[in-house]
Image (cartoon, rainbow, N blue to C red; front, side):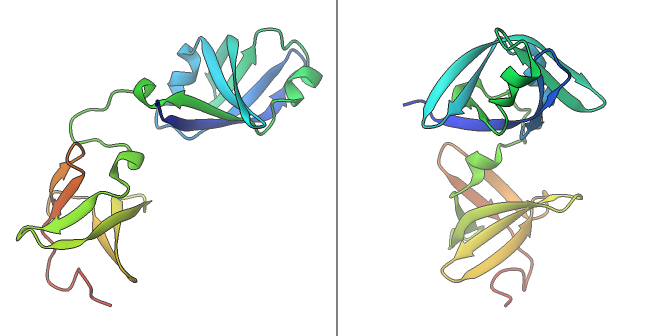
Length: 170
């Protein structure tokens, strides 16, 4: 089974020729300009639509689907979610990870003692922060080389070197 990944949501219509805006959840908004088709969740079913045109202007994504030629036609797509198959994600550079790949990884310290599992990633602007949960407690660990020793997606494991007081400090 090929897992689906949400990459955006269709927003307002734009103009009178059937264009709409897209709110991207991808770090690669340019991906939308090279898509030949989009997969949308229409109610409870997935439908595929051919892309006629897509461009980015002023950091906003605009798209037109073939056969959708008026503002009224485009209105029915408002709020629809855009998906791709997991294997269609953009390739990342070494040391970069998709948040969805990090969630639920087991976290260990350098002595191989289990600390918990990754439950969330917080982006505070400066760096991402792992939210590690163990039972009722949450620990926050910045994703910097100083604290992260290994991220092994294949074996679903993260090894960290926390400083004193970082883990279970509260």
